[in-house]
Amino acid sequence: MSSKTLDHFLQENLQDLKERGLYNEIDPVQGANGPVITINGKELINLSSNNYLGLATDERLKEVAIEAVKEYGVGAGAVRTINGTLDLHLKLEEQIAKFKGTEAAIAYQSGFNCNVAAIPGVMDKHDAILSDELNHASIIDGCRLSRAKIIRFNHSDMDDLRKKAKEAVESGQYNKIMVITDGVFSMDGDIAKLPEIVEIAEEFDLITYVDDAHGSGVTGKGAGTVKHFGLQDQVDFQIGTLSKAIGVIGGYVAGKRDLIDWLKVRSRPFLFSTAVTPADAAASTKAIELLMESTELHDKLWENGRYLKDGLKKLGFDIGQSETPITPCIIGEEKTTQEFSKRLYEEGVYAKSIVFPTVPRGTGRVRNMPTAAHTKDMLDQALHSYEKVGKELGVI
Ligand code: PMP
Image (cartoon, rainbow, N blue to C red; front, side):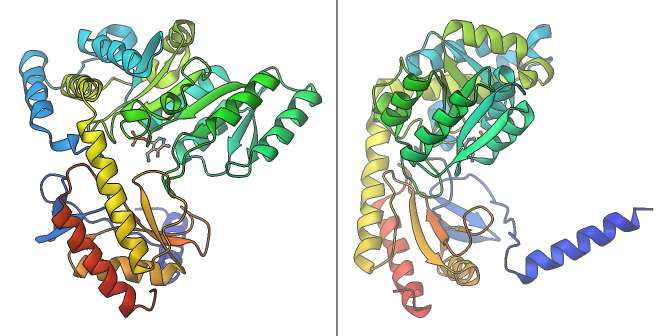
């Protein structure tokens, strides 16, 4: 028999979310998550994946993954510090360090795990963290786990950051102070002001932490946002995920050798949770090799991003302040935003609505993630549907 209190709590809250239009249904994808997907037997142009370079279905990656399964099996067998460190994991870490231009790197099971590992790995209750108010949920959780004092600064507001950094330093209360930002903010596609952040960090001796989950493979000719600004020697923690542009699964920190050595003995998901599978490690290593060899996929991604943005702007949509291929189409009110996305679905386009609490109330948007794998034809079809639904709902 289940708890009556729990039953009551769940029923009441689920009902409430549904009534307010805040309940997200999950639609399983039947088959690969490529530029066109099938959901409920219906073919849809996919504008909602983070598979920016189309690598999740790349034949070259599939091939090395299959070879890794044949040679190593399907699991790593133990946590990294017992005997679950395969040579494939070390190869991956070497490859990441080369890609990011750092002395070393450590791989985790996901980008999420990376943040809940690395932040509490170095910060504790005697420290403070200056965190951009729009930072990702995993950064927020990592900060909370560390028990450091969390000081939020207004989104990309450098005056606010400077003021709060100065106050924190002058209070004399903290041993260490860190500043954390996403490299690319996934809701709006804007890029963090890293040159200013680094300058403020130097002035106040802050530790710098950049989570470039959406920038790796996308900005800096593929090498990420830190490289985009040429700041490889001035950022302490370069965080990334292997699940978005890289197309597989996993996360990493790239940085100085001492930092990585410390995280290998002090970060809990590394110590107490098994690493990614051999297939994942081999496929990610191959993906990074491809990105380092050629910018072809990166260039195609940006070309498609520009094409979609120009098209939506011409139709009269508000596409916000994106500086990357991530293209939000801001609708505003929650219910209309969800209705917009539903109508697009009926028209054959999968573009997910994002509403409060993921973004602030009243700024609901349909977010579009064009990839290198989309053809012009697919993007034209999507634009046609946007025009139809936009007029129908009075958005344009
Ligand atoms: N950090 C940021 C900034 C992200 O956007 C995400 C994914 N949405 C993550 C971390 C988590 O990455 P993963 O999916 O690899 O766990």
